[in-house]
Image (cartoon, rainbow over all chains, first blue to last red; front, side, top):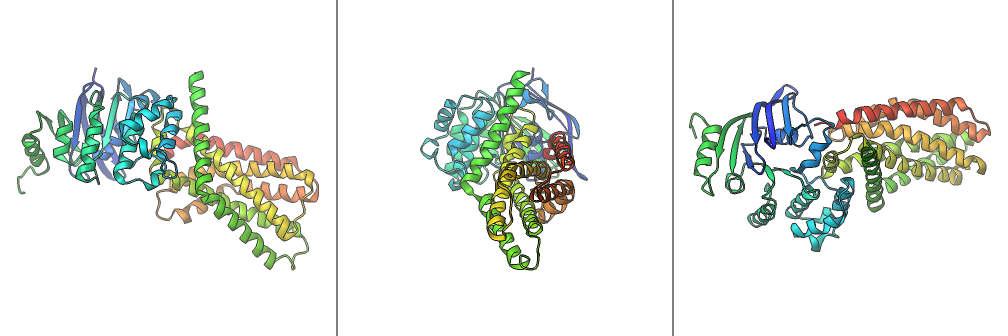
Length: 234
Length: 228
């Protein structure tokens, strides 16, 4: 059984169709990159996968259960890193993680282990509002893996990071390679290094589904260029 | 089922505790609301105290004006905290009925608003000479608590809707105050009656019924309000 099944999903935002009749499946343990230019519908699709919004048409199933507002078993299996960290600036890193641990009924001892995994143990007692962008991203990852989810949804995890912070983050994410991962990004190089398969989303439609073999991104770049500019005018 | 109820209660408790901790640390609502309450009372003292023979009317007016502004500021600030780092999205990912988040926020905002109302009451007693018999203070606190509960039941919902709007400071009171008029009416009337030494259960009943209505509406609709 596929870990994630997206079947004929359309999302309307007012008069705009952000995602149009999208279908794909992700196998357990597979790492899928969702690539596309700004405004392609990646975040809208990720929000629907995360159960933070719902399709206007079609159906999403995660671990066999449909993603609906009351699908608590789906949310139990999901770890989500969004554009924004989903924490509280006034609280420290440790307080934020303890809050989420208690909300999910996770043993608070796990907080220290996860802080270590994302290299934040020395800054655990510092308020998040004083954190750099990279540290906030690492905290967001810690929050997302606290309950040991089987599916990780990462929306632009490298956005706004310098090369070194992005490399650090990539090394941290490698610790969670055994999960099913959907990663939305427009960074082809980094995305290709993290994923086995690429879906190219353009204007809310999946226009390419490419298997990625190794670190060579030529095939992905060609598919991407053809998807966003079919006439080859660039 | 019991796990579901325990999980629901846990989320209510944690959301309330988190809001109180954030407020204790930042003191945004407390400082602003208390200063505002003081200003209202002092301005009332300068403007009306000499021209009004009935201090009860002036005191009650100052009390409930401060209540409305403090309550509005409280729910607005609470919603802004959720938007700042998208903390609310993190809460929405927790595998529990999402109305638990709403209930937790109503409880924490009720605590803030009741606290500010109590501080305002002290200010009206000191600066306006508003006299309240000591034995009626607990009843007055219950009135504050019930009014705060009704006010924040609607306030949390509307503040969540308007939190991302450009004109949220204008929209929130514009949408909220008309909906809580019965709560304010009952609060003002009950305060007046308490200072006069008698009490009408009809106003209490109105307050209780309207509180229940607002709260249940919030519980039933929060899911749709937070959907992206």
